[in-house]
Length: 68
Image (tube, rainbow, N blue to C red):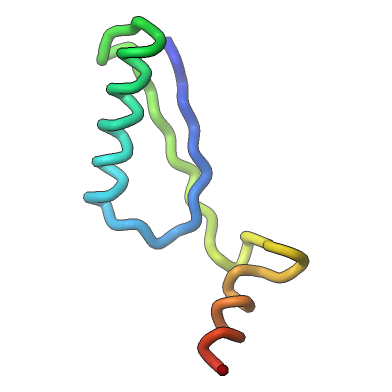
């Protein structure tokens, strides 16, 4: 029974997450030869304030882009 995890920045809609769940489930069924009911998918959502790129939080990077 595969457990597939994805870490994403917060901000996606529930519809986007549902589509992701379906696509990942289909991929697992096709490539891992498992049944739909065996697949588990988990999204870990991280706020932009907790996601860092190049030493700065994404929240700060976004804030700086809006100021220019």
